[in-house]
Image (tube, rainbow, N blue to C red; front, side, top):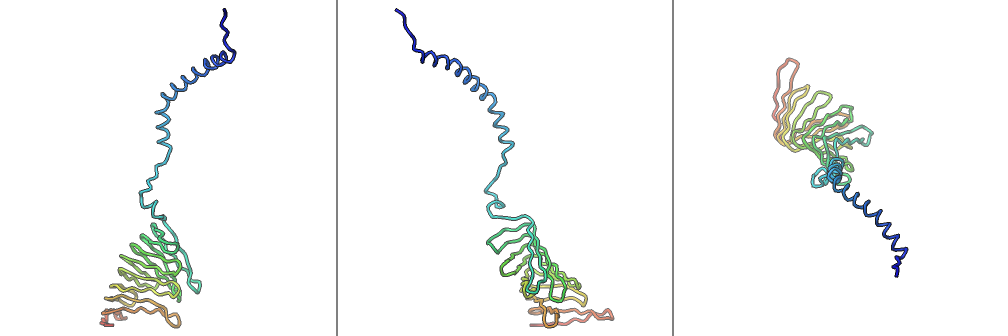
Length: 210
């Protein structure tokens, strides 16, 4: 009596004779090559640490803000970097820029940090604030507020500086504005001191209390 093997079973056996050796070869290859492939993936995949504030807080490197006042006179401010707090408000680190006054003179601005509102066009500067004008004035204070549209620079902290006509000091701040006929006026707040240089190279000192 002969035992007949179904044809389907014979095909299955023949197929397994091919598949099993291939599977064994693939398994051996993966076990040998996997450490190398894993090391490549580590080298080529950049690591991003989302815990860093630069990523979480929407910071910009070297931002540049430009604007004009109602008369089209330019204003610009740069910074080492900025953190965008809202759509219009940004915190600045090491801001520096310039504003052109009504009479055409320019003030260079510099500080350790600041805040700029692009909607109201107001720049607030803080810590080691320095203001330098093209007509020779150089003043220092701890805080200053620049309103671009009406060309006013002011502050409520101690200020000192010097210019072509002499030296100034204001205990409670200052205000720089442009009045009628394009005349620039510097007002010192609180107990103040002005040292005026005259043509004979002597100095006159005037104490002012406001």
